[in-house]
Length: 230
Image 1 (cartoon, rainbow, N blue to C red):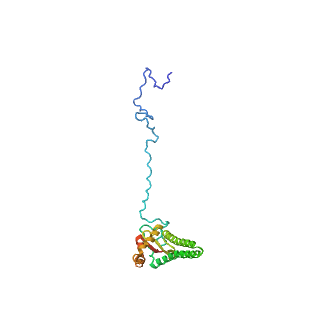
Image 2: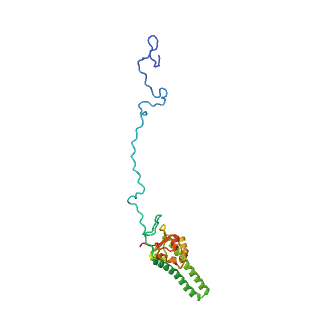
Image 3: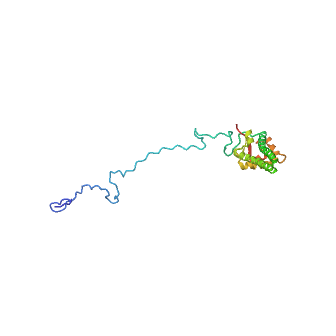
């Protein structure tokens, strides 16, 4: 008994001929040359992927120079102190008049002179007990007066004010930045004041008619003295 699936033979022993009008069998998965990797029909792989939606248009970036949104702090205008103005700074506060500058200088000198006077008095009292001790105290008092003056210049470089300037509410700042000039330049400015005494102390009198109320030292170092607000 045959177990194969061959078509039955006709009674004459010849194999049955296939029907020429019958349609060819459907090509299966992987059949045919060049289609070894073709997916089976009806799986949806032949269809192109669906188009994605058009992304939303982004808003145009803000133009440069536009003001910040409401709610941000805006830097206050100059005049409420000596902070850190932007480059190209031009003073708004009025310049300190000559009498105010002279008054501040006299107050500072009185403080240093007062230290020296106290030291001299103590040296005189101790000198009655020992001349060596009296002389030592006098030297210490002299050095203390000089040290106090240097300390004043350092503070002026950091804050723009000495004791005298603080009392009369004026401040020394750099003309180009509006900031304190720093301890080094403040000490150097004290030596540059030598040119104010040449000739006949004319540089010290120059603020009387100068538009910016500057001495010669101020003009050389580009510093100004302003009235402090408040």
